[in-house]
Image 1: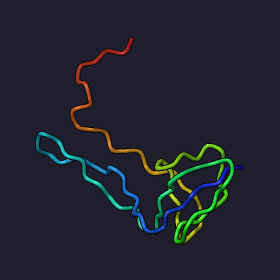
Image 2 (image 1 turned 180 degrees about the horizontal axis):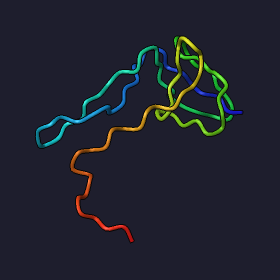
Image 3 (image 1 turned 180 degrees about the vertical axis):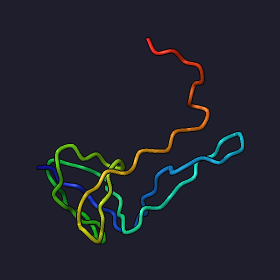
Length: 94
């Protein structure tokens, strides 16, 4: 089991969409009750408040997961919405 360093004062957001006009700009949505997973280590080390450590699974990666303050669980950040111009029209499947 690993240790996740939680930064409760930092917000966590993800790309939930894109603007309609080129150049496309990302639209960020804030995840409510989320705290940033700032680091994941095998062994914890001394830190200053308000940071704190929690146990986490071995596959947790900093900034790709967040800590839910209400449920006290570590949850995967949603994947970013696909960029509008990333889709190729007329591509063939081989």
